[in-house]
Amino acid sequence: MESIKVFAPATVANVVCGFDILGFAVNEPGDELIMEMTNKPGVNIISIEGDEGKLPLDPAKNTVSATVISLLRYLGKEGIGLNIKLKKMMPMGSGLGSSSASAVAGLFAANELLGKPLSKLELLPFAMEGEALACGHGHADNVAPALFGGFTLIKSYEPLEVISLPVPKLYCALLYPHVDVPTRDARQIIRSKVLLKDAVTQWGNIAGLISALYTQDYDLLGRSMKDVIIEPIRSILIPEFDRMKEMALGNGALGFGISGSGPTVFSLFKSADAAQKSLQEMKQMLAQQGIESNIYLSEINKKGPIVL
Ligand code: HSE
Image 1 (tube, rainbow, N blue to C red):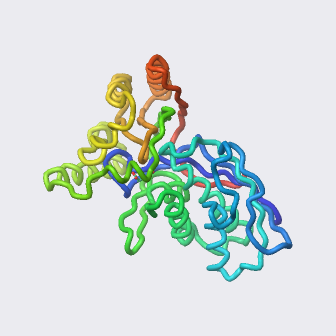
Image 2 (cartoon, rainbow, N blue to C red):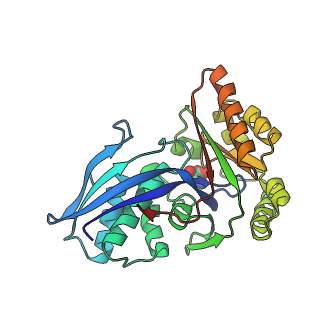
């Protein structure tokens, strides 16, 4: 195989109560990437569409090429030539795991072209390196669901242990308000210490959420999507957060919260119609305040990256 076209999905990290340890993938949005083998050794970014010129084309600085270079080095295949064309089909710096989707697309494509020498689990540390390059911290709660699809639990970082969780039928409503909240800043405003009473509440909610996924208990899922540690601080950066939450829950959302580090917000629904209605209401309310937004409605993505 000389050339391949792949898709990798956006992801919702944290899932409200699981800061840095929980995430899930969605079918829409996501990134597309074309990778071609060439005779000239080295990894090159030929073009990037949809990034408004913001991403570096320098192969050492671009997250996609840097992770692929790292993979080739590990495999002892530095003599191979790879040309990359990236099509960004989601907003960057939005809390939708944009850099993760691109890195996963690149690693998945390279691994396929080379005859699948590594498993998805073995690709994960390379994707985490990309995350560290993109936002200064190598968390796995975007890259793991982007790679594996579905709901993913990062049980431990050292050693790295990832568990794929059951996926009940759910619709995810995503709204990206056009305000700037870089992941680096959104991480810096969080307190590094938590009160024991808050930790106890949070442990209960995480355990409840995991249990709800296994038992498909939608009420328990909703009752567990509560965050007493991160959301109270980060939500200040998101305009009309409380009003959007009221609107989503009023329309039957099981739970509502910040997607990753924001500013995108997400909610989970049993009904696609209710999810669509909630998105339209929130979008309209923000527009009245002069804030543009993108909305997406999708089921949970179960596959991760795919060959197109
Ligand atoms: N867990 C990370 C954070 C995800 O909340 O900072 C970033 O998308």
